[in-house]
Image (cartoon, rainbow, N blue to C red; front, side):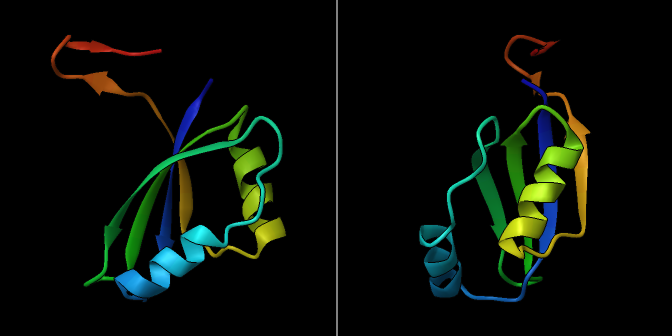
Length: 86
């Protein structure tokens, strides 16, 4: 499944982020939210997603009214194996 990193700018603290994460609506079939890196000082969030394509993630964000700056297609480089993962 293709992977993507979504960048969000949402000034909030840890407590506000936890509340938002816990109240996320159900995602459409075929889209999976894997993890999020949070930079509370700059209000930036970087989320890893799996989805059939970039447009599916963007459409999910629009239906959830989730602001986002960009969605990037990415590949994971496994440092221990010195290889890209599929």
